[in-house]
Length: 396
Image (tube, rainbow, N blue to C red):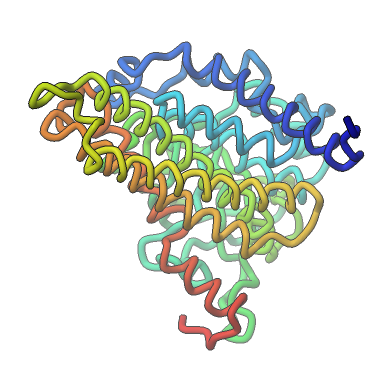
């Protein structure tokens, strides 16, 4: 028998490494049964015990260097970890609770001062510091260049005034990674002049109002009204005026991970649906014998496999420091679509029982729907591919 060539052996070893990550993440996540997530959803309770379990095992620092308390692993490892969290039945409630320890620190890691990194990153890796993420504004929408939150320098401090919306974690977070304008918008370079700050979420200066929303109730979303919030200059991330560029550095990896979260949630729904289809007997036969039930589920599985393949390809490119914008955006589009289709088909498979919370499908369905809207809409992905890949005129 011929030995495998070196490149095949390397691929096999790499897949073995990723499988170890999958197995370890799944073992931790599946300590928390579906009933746990149903109760968190019903009560709007932040899943601290879930987060602490991953923190104690060191997973919150998966992308951080060891010198800041991290595991020094890559995007591929983070992607499969978060996919397994979604697949465990935790859905977006579990995935988001971990996700926001993994990605908001990236601009600080890549562009922050050494002092800022040492003050912030080890605390996040240990799960001792939860950070909110404040970028979106109600009047700007997807046109971030038109944010109105302003920061004015006064000596060695900045004073910030403005408003943010859809700010994740603000009910529980101690700090916020905040984007604000530090110079007026220039039509020729509209994305310049914005700065990233690591700010204390001072409740005497920030009025935080929770948004009552469709899904992912355990991980809060908020409006934040900012009035005279002071931030020391040493908490500026990188250079003044380049905050948006620093955020862009984190967009591609976030798209990859969101895709894999959608894939994981889709697989969770398929597992629930196939279990039900095998056990539910109507007209003296399990409903899974009917092609009208079986074929749509099979198609959903195929779509999930395709989305995962594109996402992992994008992750591999990123880990090799190769451009991956088209691949990452395509992955996000496919993962969000495949995950939602799978949850929707799982609802059809369960029939009327899908509306009952005890079957858990409706929660996954509500949560995965978010991924077609955020962190970027499906339409904006198509805009990007149309313009940047196909060379068609820009439409926005």
